Length: 607
Image 1 (cartoon, one colour):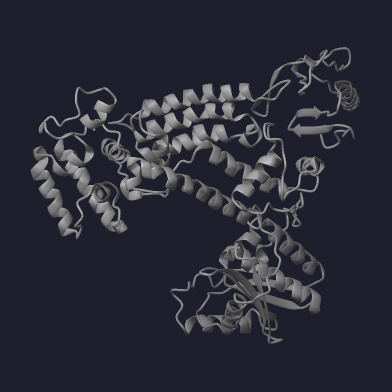
Image 2 (tube, helix red, strand yellow):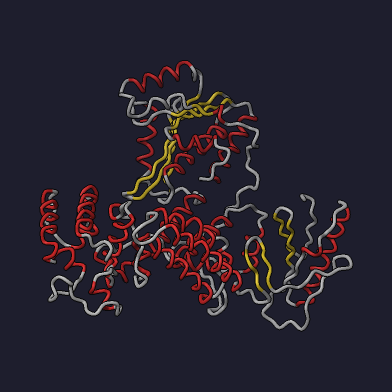
């Protein structure tokens, strides 16, 4: 279908053997006229190849906010495809004439409810799969289905989108084994699963970023340019539904991040798939890792390699790094025969692999611009950068990789002999030490080299930023809940989990504060009073059960003694249930002792 005709007045979308023709106009008559012309052109092409169009499998939809006096009609031969109000396109349920996404969201609710029943069938509050397995199933089977196409159907109204929230809330209740009355925010913080609107924002970031790095012929960037929306100050009517472009730009503004500029990648990589770049790269010294090479062995191996394999080669050393305190990135090259160093300071958001690739790119660009064709060996201490160069399906820093591959192809065509050699770092190799020293000096340079943000790096930064954007909401709302005594963000607390389902659920309920003790049950009108059944003058709270109840005095004493042996002096709920203020190894021991107490108390069935 490579010669499928493209009509200038319409947009043609092709996926496998499915063809979708989109016609836009200010009037229904104009759109119908353009669509008929495109269909007639397609019909001629089909007859040219002795094919037929299955009219019974075709459908036509009209999308407009105006009133339609009559249904549009398009002829395919002597027949007309039916005009429908709903249609499935690539798994998305479209509804017209006003695209509200109501049918698709109802479909998601029905489909995900069946998958939610699977979770309920494999685990209960006292038995079944553990929390991590259940959360993994939810993220894969349920959340993955909700996320599919959410950057598109995210333009639906907030009322429609909120209909999906109960699906995630129910899944978190099942996975954690929590009470139905447990606060949703506590469930999200305890499981580390953000709200659906945060997840949709992340995926909008990724989709917009991918569009900005798509090929020059991708239709969406052209639509963005035609929209005439300012990237720095996007304006849109408040009550109108927001397209992908507006939602992405507003999400960038909410995180105080500048929207990425257009950096299209070539639709076809510069290196054809039958050309193998691995002969240019050598890892012969990779068996001698940094730890195994002492101060004399590594330089000796390098000298032997330089005097034998690379005798007569023009040697270039490259290096790049990224520091976090302070945040900075830099790259440097050192040309041994010329005794010349060149350095560049990069923006702080570039990672170390990007810096290493940039140094390799600059080395290739220098030898192409200033040297005659000869034998050249480029030494680098970054294994990841070399593996990305030889990998046929590399996804990180593709823009830099394409530029490096282009330079390699051009140099090889000009009869250069090139080798990329890995060497261990910081083991006394003189050229590597010099370029490393030069690169560290570049970290303090005032001039910053302009390097477009790579797609993978941008996605990583956006994920971190959007994840942190949720933490202020947690920090503001968690203090008013019981869980606020144990955590103030959504960070992972692996020490607070256990593989035994009954114990894990009990610990979760105790941290959230919604348990089967009399104090909580009385607030839900499920108990006659809130007093402990053994000491009738005290309310049966979590603190009373774990710290003070005379019924479990001997177990409290044993727990205190074992904690004292570990050096834990505070006998409080945050320490017992969350390990607050303790180091990680000690937290695991404390949670284990609490689990022992819960087993001996024989009250797991009540919690």
